Length: 173
Ligand code: AR6
Image (cartoon, rainbow, N blue to C red):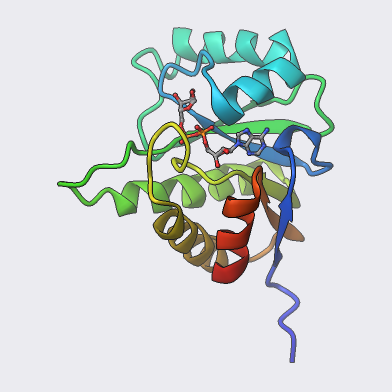
């Protein structure tokens, strides 16, 4: 029998800035002041209100920057979503196992989403771009963690930009 308390974990190929969800997750860096990849796309599309809130966070709670594995929300500005949840993925390391930090990004982001009252959340493939995490391992951690933590949401959606990422996440799901 289906369990109604479990969110639908879904997957789509596309641009996270266009998703009609309550919260989109940003693969940010600890400065919270923007960057390339999905971070650049979110700030471009959402507009200056996001950066203004990020600067406020840097002037208060996160004066030292947002630590890796943690998450914090701002407005989503002009995007269809209501909130952006910024999280900082770990940079891939050959010599050190940072998997727990990557799992923490998904877990903490869903924790923030839950506190906000978000019912639908979209995730990019955190750390698998500039931060160099191998795609299959990144997908494995993402899917396993979200499945464990998705209770109570209507939908948790993975939004993969390119065909290769989409195929890898689809296989994992
Ligand atoms: N929608 C969905 N996914 C996207 C989009 C988009 N619009 N644009 C890129 N991706 P990355 P990271 C995919 O590098 O590895 C930034 O400079 C991309 O193809 O954005 O966590 C930050 O400021 C890849 O599959 O994030 C940090 O400095 C995935 O998103 C650093 O990059 C993640 O790639 C974070 O690196």
